[in-house]
Length: 195
Image 1: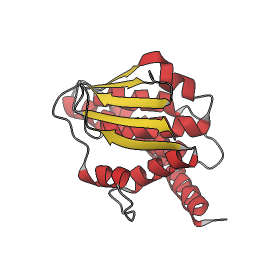
Image 2 (image 1 turned 135 degrees about the horizontal axis):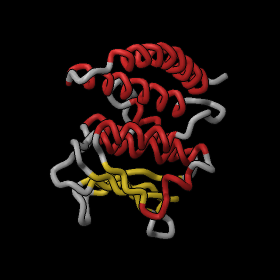
Image 3 (image 1 turned 90 degrees about the vertical axis):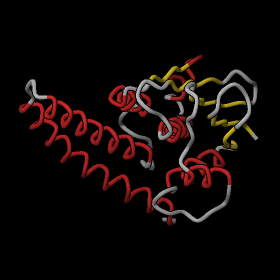
């Protein structure tokens, strides 16, 4: 077993164990639900944590994953009050190919790190060699510098950018390139295309 496979298995196992415990906590929180704003906010935070763990468990799974990453991603966006516009069903169609689903969902997750409530993320593939263009419609949004550095340069992984490095490697493994496109109508666009 190579180091990458071992690391992925370890991460998936940790997420699996944590997700089970978080599901139990979520069940208890649902029993506590009342009209109190704080309790509703707590429940949303626990749901978001549980969804995030399930998302990463699927992202790092070695042999496929039990749940649709697209569905989990939309649930996360719903809780964060983000709009994901899947123009041309780019995300939905990726479910048939687990590696493509991981790449696209991971890239959308990275882009969502730049978003605020009510922002819109648009996914398209309108060009022949373009796998996907993931844009944030709202002005003034920027990716964190750790993600930018990981996508644009060959830098060592650390806790800030390891997921971005993983997404870049997924793209390269499947014969794709991924980068941040600073031109065009939108201030933030992540572009994935075939080499």
